[in-house]
Length: 183
Image 1 (cartoon, rainbow, N blue to C red):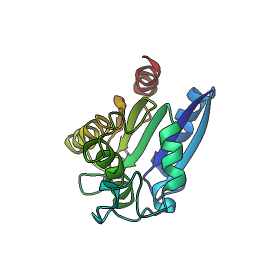
Image 2: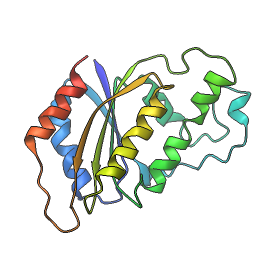
Image 3: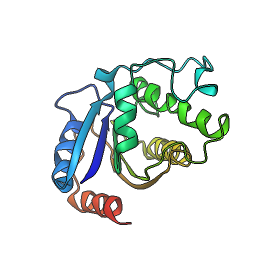
C-alpha cells in the first residue's frame, strides 16, 4: 500500500483548504493517508544551530514522527493559503526544517538523503488573484524537492476566496489528480 502525506497550512478547520482536502482524499482511497496540520504541529523554526551539519537528524525532536511519515510517503500534498505572497509561517517553519536533509546531502555526503521517491503536489488558495505568489510557492517546493528525492508534478490553484468569487473546479481537480498519479 502506498502512503499519502497531506500537510495543511491553513489555521481554519472549516475553510477552503479543508474542503479541498475532503475533495482530494477519495482519489487516494487506495493509500494510507496521514495528515498534519501545520498550526497544530507547531514546528520550532530552524535556528541554524549546525547540529545537522554533524549528525543525521535535527537537534529539535518535535518533528521526529513527522519526518518518519515524510520519508515513508509516496505522495505528498501541500495545501496552503497565500499569506503575504508565501506560505504561512508554520508551513515555512516545516520547509525550513528540511535543512537536515540538505546538510545530510551536502555536508555529510549522503547521495540520497531521502531514499523513497515522492510525487508532490501543491494546492494553493488565495484571497485575491495571487497567481504570481502561487507560482513562487510552487517553485520553492520544486527547488526543495530537488534534494528531497521528489518531483512537484501538479498544482491546483483557487484564487479570490476572500470575495467569495471562487469555484471548486472539477476539471482542474481531475487534472491535478491525474498529474499526481501518473508516473
